[in-house]
Image (cartoon, rainbow, N blue to C red):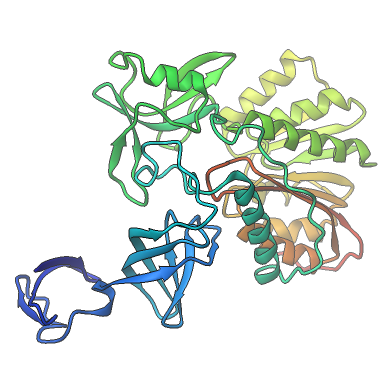
Length: 415
């Protein structure tokens, strides 16, 4: 039997006899020559215990946790280890020996190959429960926050067909997604989590569409296909993919603004100014400032404010790190909606040093959220509400909105 695998630096091929001894090594990779087959090459059985926030199922073997994609609690599976570390291993499922009692049939024919979805085999109610449990575990493990009273998770009214935009690559008249954890592409003629209008377009003649990396979006009930630029964005700018849950998120934000006594609101990652201008229009007695590093975004935001005749907005083209050294936020309500990496340390320290009275933190990554909340709560801030929102059904991703207020200021030295 011949076996191919990957070492840390090279690909190797070995031949194994019936007794499990390595007989031939065609590439000179001799670490295991004349020894029994390495344990990581053997197929073994595993029972899955839980779901992780990366989307994998988790089991335990030889005092290691083992992560296995496309599994769920109760599954008994035959696995092959593909990566082994001191305290954990990563495996692929070779065979589903006995399905867990909750397993459901995925709706998509590409599930398990396409990298877009993690949990189509998991009932939607279980997905919601897993996300809440993972959020609580992350807040405790990373943020050392044990007494956070979570609001009920905001579920999506559409577990499928919720995405109003998708990104991929058009090649020779076919639309492609990436394979899971790979740069390889897979052609798809239908995406079960995409809006039905997008799916109808995918099944049409695509030969005249722009080739290359594109975004396909529903805009004003029409399909737009636009190229993705070198900054991994498009002329359409950023907007949430799930309109239903996005509206819930916006309503939560507007309620906090309405209840705030602050006369000024600072939207520190404003993008194209959607929230900035909406808040300014609804609350003309408040001055609203938007900050974004993109010149194109700020130009769009200013034009939108002018078109709506808003006179209570100011926009700055700047990084948040720089603007907080110039703009006072002491008596403001600050909205922060950072990328997955969370808040830069200088942003956190400046918000604390300037004693910003109220912060609305919108996060798409619970781990960096927990890290930042640990710092803020250790510096005098109190969590008033923390609401998880399921913006991305069939995946392990989770959106959160947190409202914090300053209770006991702590002096912080800024650099």
